[in-house]
Image (cartoon, rainbow, N blue to C red; front, side, top):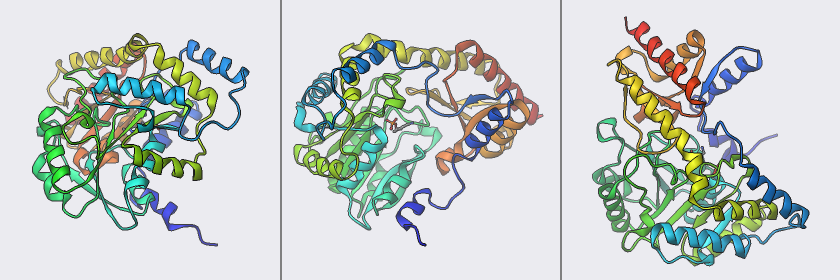
Amino acid sequence: MQISKRISGLLGGGADAWALFFRSRRMIAAGMPVTELTIGEHDIRTDPSILAAMNTAAMQGETGYAAIPGSDALRDTVAKRVQARTGVATNRDNVLIVPGGQSGLFAAHHATLDEGDTALFIDPFYATYPGTIRGVGALPRAIATRPENGFQPQEADIASAAVGARTLLINSPNNPTGAVYGPATLEGIARAVIAQDLWLISDEVYDTQVWQGRHISPRSLPGMAERVLVVGSMSKSHAMTGSRIGWVIGPEAVIEHMTTLSTHTTYGVPGFIQEAARFALDAGPALEHDIAIPFARRRSIALDLLKTQNLVKAIPPEGAMYMMLDIRATGLSGNAFAERLLDEALIAVMPGESFGNSAAGHIRVALTIPDEAFAAAFSKLLGFAASIAK
Ligand code: PMP
């Protein structure tokens, strides 16, 4: 029996980006005291007040089929939020509720690409990006960025890659690099995208985690609202990773088109989850701040510890819940460093190479364990780097 190439091709045939993560999970299952600084999962759970709202909604009967583009109430809440944060006129017809940002990324590419079209993305990239593009039958084309530029994409690189392409996917604040795209970067992106008549898909799932500068949505730049699809999520902002809820914002006609896709794939998001999301968004910025602030604290802890040595270098993350460390001075690749760190120091991090060629010689450290344990693990990591460099 044959299985589809469309799905077997999702992984792209390269080395499995998650191999080290799965190895660390196996070590933990075998009882080894591994400290995990791998995936983007908070060390707190969803706030009990949100769970209570979820429970109330379910008990009140929100357990049947829900409206496929999302409930009017949640779409209104999301539209109001997006308008308040970006200044761009937004109403419920610009909002599609989806089961998480990943589902939104898939839907956005499905809505804008045909078989064989070329889709651009920025390297380093979140691990699912090329597979998401291949999954809709399109051809991924990476645009490299450089640590010397703080991993901000350059207009000339985008402009030359954009010829013949149909979409560009960007992510700010960025996973894995922590880059927050400033006005100059975004204006360059907008010019390149308009010149080649591309769709811009903007993954903004970390928009509440900004430590330096401010988050700008490219949808707010002149002439962009009609060609931008924004992907948002409650996963990171509200510690709701397991609830699987997010949205896509875009022109009405595209949202309508994507509603047809939802009818044939997800058939909507459970009503009680939508009500929990509405409650969480209505709770306002204080809750989001409380969820984000531990990452800012651990970022400072790491930056202070880095000052005690000059072997390992960081590009100080401007946002998101990770830190990229340049470990090239140890003479090891990101992969080799991460493998040895796991075996010899029992600390699991992601090799930069998991996120593309542009992150080679780096590792990504997630800021996702309690402060004291984080400080101890980070010091141990620096000590390990020093011991190999000797
Ligand atoms: N985009 C980026 C950049 C991410 O890091 C993640 C999750 N780690 C997602 C999208 C998907 O998140 P979710 O589906 O939980 O919203």
